[in-house]
Structures are given as structure tokens and as C-alpha cells.
Length: 233
Length: 123
Image 1 (tube, rainbow over the protein chains, first blue to last red):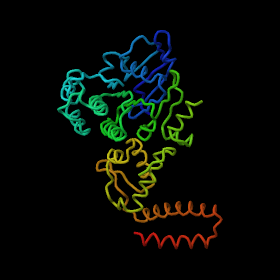
Image 2: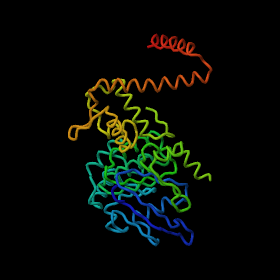
Image 3: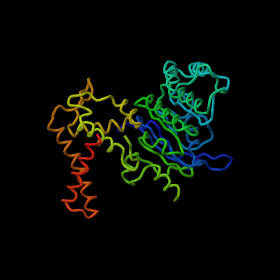
Image 4: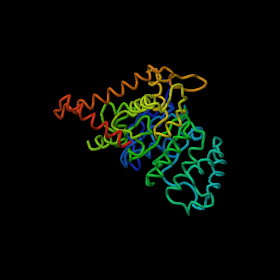
């Protein structure tokens, strides 16, 4: 058993007195794809933002490859936020050179390869791209860093099923074997077959977690059915 | 291949890989595709494929050579045994369904013979 690459203990965060995370604890091993599941408001995005080092004023301890969230951890963590973070005027090449300047671990050649894999138009700006295309460009950038931890917040929400499949293929193909990839979603069936393990959040805490196949075995149901049962109770 | 999300995926992959070998889609001595390629083709996690292939190794149907990859066994007896085991499972599930319908062995055998011919004609 290798040691965890991500460890969170008693993590608490409130927005103006309204609790978003309530003493959440979590420990994840590298070399796996983890599905972070939960309804809207369960704390997924808040957790990912804290892990990414973009949210302050929380209590508890967080360790990412032995670093607390901050400049050092950001060099090891590739974060894909759920909102667009690129200027509308950018063409793919502009975004690629931006990432190149920002991140020492960014692999430009790989990014160009992924843009081609996704069939994105090099001559179009983000403003002129569909939602699915923008999503694909942002995933190309996030996955082209040689990071230890990848945090993808809802990378496939709101794209059509064909795009979803090609995005998941892109992620599977480009995910380094010894990295940790956390992918959040409220649509479990979308990632059902690609996750090693799942973490279900409810009201700012971990409600249920385990290896995907162990949970299927123990409950005799798909993760999607299990998720519905958990959240109905 | 259609996966059933309510059952462990790794076990379904083991069955699929055994079928590939039993049916000769992966012939004796043939080199298997790399883990990542299989994972992409099946749309599943590479770790799951790796776990399933280790089980196929354990069953003796494949062997892993550290430098050159994973190969189907050349042991024809093992391959026939795998084929027989898979056929037995299928036969058992047919038998239990036939039982459930109150069929006799003769009726079931007749049905198999009739359908067998039909299957051959339509191929």
C-alpha cells in the first residue's frame, strides 16, 4: 500500500456563517481516478477550490503531496474549475502559450495533440466556440500539465453524449499512472465505468466512500442506483 | 461489449477476456494489446483492466513477460478447458430457465436441436 497523496482532516468552511463543509475528512491514494459525487450544494466545489488553493479562510488540515495549499502545492495540482477561466478572445494557441508561461510542468506538445484529438478549430476564438468545444479546450490544458494531482470540477456537465465520450477518452488516455485524478459530477452514470473509487458527499461531509467494484459487489447495484438510494434517505 | 453497471466491472472483463481466448479471437501465443489500449477500447479505467488481466494470468490463460508484454498461453488443453467452462455456465443457465418453465430433458434437447439448425441456417 502506497501512502496517500491527498489527506484532509476535519475540514470546515462556511460562507458568511452558512456552513459548506462540516469537519470533512478524506484520504486518497495516487494512481487512481476518484469520482467525487454529490448533489448541488453538497460541498464538491468548495472542497475542490480549497484543494486547488484558491479559497481561503477554512479550518482543518489539508495535505497535497506533503504540501499545504499554497504556491508550492499549485505547482503539483492541476485544477479545472467549473466556470470558464479563459478570455473570450483567446484562440487555442493563445491559451496554450498562457499556460506555458504559468506552469513549469506544462507540456505544450501534448496540449496541441489533445486539441487535435478533440478536433478543435485552431482559427476560432473561445467566443466563437460551442460550450462543448470550450470545455474540451480547458480539459486539454488541464490534462497537459505533468501534475501529481488533477482536480476536474464537473468537466462534462452540459455537453452532449458524443462529446462526453470523447472527453472521457481524452482524460483516460492522458492520465499518468501514478497521479491522482479527482473528477466531480452529479451525473454518476457519465463516469460510472471510468472511476476506481467514489466519494459521496452530503451536507459537507463524506457520506460514503469505497472502491467502485466493491460497492457494486456489496450493494448489487450500479453506483448511479446506489447514489439515488443514498440521497433519497 | 455492453457492461452491466450493477456488477463489478473487473469480473465482467475477466469473462470477456476468457471468451476472447476461448473463442480464438486472441489466438494461442498471440500478444495482447496494451492495457491502456484495451481500456480505451472498452471505455473503462486502465487499473480495472490491469486487475482483470492479472486474474486471467492467474487462471493460466495468459502469461506476462516483463519486457515484451502479455501473451495468450500456447497450452491448447487450458484453452479448451476455458471454452468448456464457459459453455457449461451458459448451458447451466439455459437448464435452470428450462426447469423454471417446467420442460423435460427431452423437450429441452429437442428445442436446442431445432434452434441449433435455425442458427446454422441464418449464418
